[in-house]
Image (cartoon, rainbow, N blue to C red; front, side, top):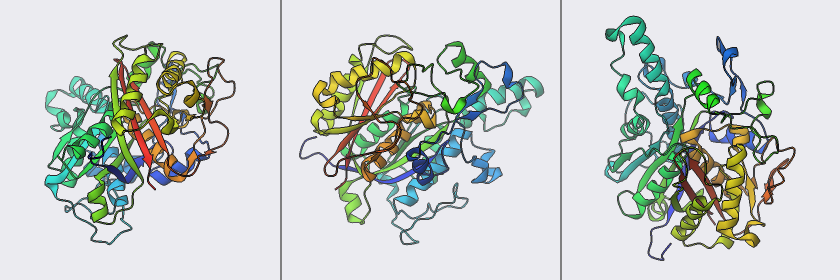
Length: 435
């Protein structure tokens, strides 16, 4: 990062996940090594190859009124819930409209700080969008005819629907965007938000990701790919990154949102700062539509480009929240990429964790949630453990945190959050501790 480049800071955090209905409960559960994975209780679930997933700890119906939920896909509803928590955490005034989507209260002045809508942007991504709406609406069409299909079907199923609703809710007029790159989608959202502020398009950006597609079709299709774990008898122990006996990822759902601001804007209003959003790097594997390049070369490029974008060196990195999906091929490829990017000497000292072992894999929402976790790791100086790691793979030679949380050293520190998606999309975001 050049000396003249605008510094971007994180001032608000929000989330609803399989571990908790907000950031605090999710973080507490992660540090305790708890799992949000549980058996599915659907009619006919016994016929599916995979019968468990990481479902939300708090259903949107417990937070939002039924009338509002009828016009939102599940992924849109939880994005609004997370956005309201992040907005309140940043100390902003509640949006000037009736029917708030979430019951969040700012601890700041009740009036809060109001943002100029022309200087407020939104980047909220989803890898799949309104899957439930699309499939349920087709069932209605087949069984009852076209006239019974909801007029809200299209805005509920489109992948940019969550970003649109968040933009409308908070009056964001600097731009509302939804980047779609499979499981790298919300990692890209963070990077795009940083660029919106650096290029002067916005002073504040609401950014993050959301996904809610735990559906029989998803369980069947990912199961047919042999991509998901089939530990149906012990779901909480199914996601086990770096373990010799890992057999695939666990599907999860949830949303995470951050408030990014220029440092100048945040200081002017006296905002607390969780961390610095230092930079982002991207690359493409150009290798396979599903499998990662086993050399890790493309992923390494994303990390190196992120460091360059942030104006940092490999030696500045003390921690990595890895993509770590618990697939046999993916975990090792990523570790190869870390060593290629940071070098053998530096990578041996970096603490690595795989938090999907507890949250499941949120697909397009993963990068945002793991960005929030990375920020909390730097802020509180504690690395959550990788759960279910009982027999370390012989090919794993990095410092994987397991068992108990690990304390980070005091002082200046930076961390990487990696997100990789089908199609060979690679994204790495760098955060720095706010001192």
